[in-house]
Amino acid sequence: MSQVSSTSTGTRAASCVIEASQTLTISASASAGRQEVLPVIEVAVLIIAAVAPLLLQDYITVYATRVLILCLFALSFDLVWGYAGILSLGQSLFFGMAGYGVALLSRDFNVASIFAVIPLGTLIGFVAALLLAGFLLLGRHASSIVFVSLGTMTGAYAADRLARGSYYLGGQNGIPSIQSMSIGSYALSEGPAFYYLALVILILVYLSSRFLLRSQFGLALAGLRENEQRIAFFGYKVQHLKAIIFAIGGAIAGIAGSLYAFHEGFVWTTMLGVVMSTQVVLYVLFGGSGTLIGAVIGTAIVEGLSFWLSDNYRDIWPIILGVLLLLVILFRPLGLISLVLGERERVGSFGPSPKEIRKEIRNAAS
Image 1 (tube, rainbow, N blue to C red):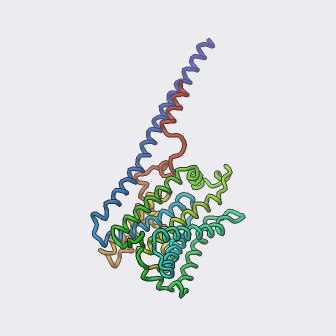
Image 2: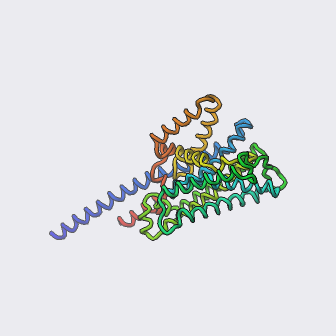
Image 3: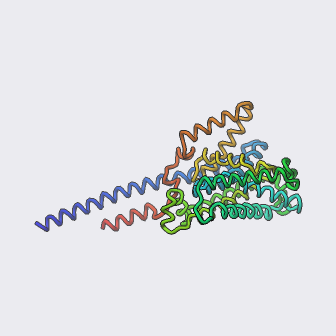
């Protein structure tokens, strides 16, 4: 009798293992299928960006270059907000400070080499963000979201007012007539050359950010976004993690500000102010926060719509654009990218691969 009972129990256990194996295998396969969506989107966006100058008119290529630089700026904000949950309403502070810094380097020291401009802009953005993070994030007590948001916004507003009142910084007129950026003896002017330079830098920053976010540090950030208290319970120094990603975001904004200054040929106070910070928030909201590619897509669509609407509906285009943004935020709170990207892929892929899971299940079943 005991043998029959033992055999029946063993059969039921084996049946449960097989059912669990099948369920987990299907789940893993489905997860693997979903994880193929993001690379497809990234490759499609890359192909479109790479061939765009070959199809566009020259003046549109110049505008598209500006869009690529703003995509870089949007990435910096997406890292800070989409992954660490820091609503930086003063992200333009690092963007504008780097722009003014390289403009002064060009005006006062006649230096426009890309090998000086980009490192300096990166350093300015990084140091400024690190100092602000030390004040807002690394206090004795944890800072609230509202405090950090208002603190960053206040910093951007103060910098804007300071630049407007400074004769050395050009006041409200900014710093005009910045010389062309150079690579050795070659001067980069507006057009395909500057476009592909901006595209290469955007790709490098994107891949670096993607690698960082798929690392153990990225896993901690993903946990930080979902449940900050639980991450703190596991022993992570939450405020230090926030300060690190905040400084990295500032460095990327610094790169964008440096490129923007030389591409436009002048810098002005708007680059430092709250308007620019609000603009980058809309880019990421529209495309989808916490995905990187969503920030790029959102920037391209918003800027593309602005360009087309302002050309065809000159009197009411801001109203039309505002209504479209409102509708997207209302009905797709996770942005347009959520139409094709699942929640698991938005957070990221960590832990063993589906193939490793199936192998473990087969070993357990046997």
